[in-house]
Length: 218
Image 1 (cartoon, one colour):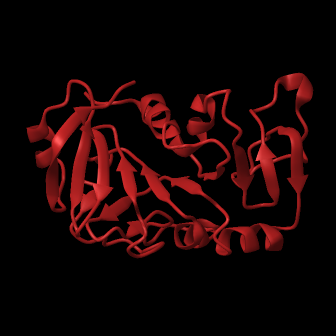
Image 2 (image 1 turned 90 degrees about the vertical axis):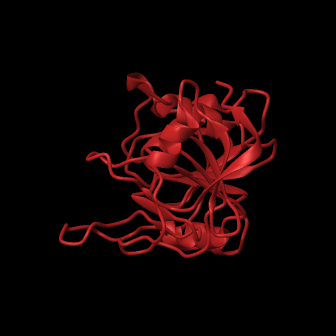
C-alpha cells in the first residue's frame, strides 16, 4: 500500500527547479538526488561545508576525506566549492537555500516538526536541522505516514522535542502529498492504490481533502 522510499524521493524531486540550491537530509531525502533531471542545473549543499555535491563514488573514486553531513562518502561536481562550517551555516541562516528536504518523526497540523531525538535515547544533537527549517525558503518533509507500530506521525500536536515551529510547507509520505494550510494537513495528491478513508484513519491531525485531489504521478 502506498509509495516506497524511492517513489517518495522521486515525487519530491519534482519540487526542484532549475538553478535551485538544495539541502537534502539523511535517509529518504538523500535519495531525492537520484531523481533530479539531468537538464536542471542544481547545486546540492551540505552543511559541513560543500556546495556542489555529486553522486556517491564508485570504489575506485572513493575519497575518505570527502563526506557529507551524514558522514557518507560523496563526490563533488565541476564548479563545486568547499568552505568552513561557519560559512555554510551563514548561507543557511541568510536564506540562500531554496529548498531543504528532511525526514521527521512527527509533524503537527501547525507545521511544527520533531525530527532529532526520542527522550531517553543518547543523541549527539540536532545538527543543522534547526537552522535549515528556520532559514530555508521552502521546507519539505519526506517520511513514512506511521511509525513502526502503526501509530500516526501527522499529529494534532508534536509530543517529541521540537526542531522548529510553524515551518513546514509540505509533507510527502507513503500515502500522499500534504500541504500545511490553516492549521490542517491538506491532501492534494494521493498515492496510487490508496483510498481517502485509509489516509483519514491514519492521520491524527486535522485533515482536509483538496477539491481537485489528484493521484501522485510516478
